[in-house]
Length: 326
View (tube, helix red, strand yellow):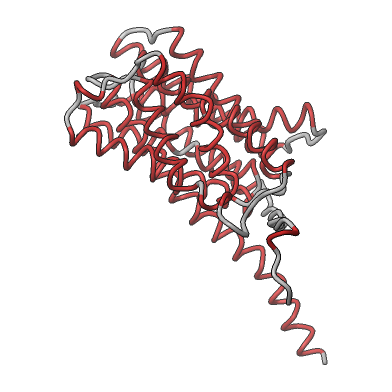
């Protein structure tokens, strides 16, 4: 009996470790896709395509791919889930993408990837403290401070090397970080699964944006090459609207919003490296030191945050008329 009890205790103790490991893997996939997104998006918004084209591809393609997840027979969601999805779309959907795209157009890939992702966990911690009465511990506060210090160093080093960044671009990225942080806190408490949330964000964003995009004739696809349009369609529509949202939501479920958003703050390091061969944006030694400080802050926040408790996704509601007798 004692041996069985010891084995059961050992298995229970291993569950949090397995959840953390799985969460880190999901977060790692999301980080790689997000990092490339800053570089790929900057590549196009500084050439022929514009913010509006990137947004249309992101949510138009994403909605086509993910709509069957919530609209097909037997997979319909209750009305409350659609209302929740609209709120998520207003936080991490259309406004977020427009804000980041504007920031990318007015700053650089390294600066944009340094501001929005690194401030996001700080905002998440502050919002949880202010609205959910969940004050951060000492290690979390040190981690947040390191992230902010590293961010300040990155912006300062970039300004010294390339000139002061555009204030409007910086403001757009800061606001994007705040909306992203709000989304992570609300999603953790929602009843939607990662794939359901991703589908609803794309559907609502496409419904809100595409009619305006077509009515005002904002498309510049005729000026861009077929290869550039195809690259953006795959990256924005499939990877960002589908894979990245699902993997990030899964990481939030497994790690909790504080740890998941802190790991996403590793984006500046990866995006800065990717920007060298793709965009020719070479980081300075000062930026390298600042990135190391951010990584240290990320490590503190991730280690100080316990794994999140499992959360069951919202059950799919099948209308009575569509139920088949057993």
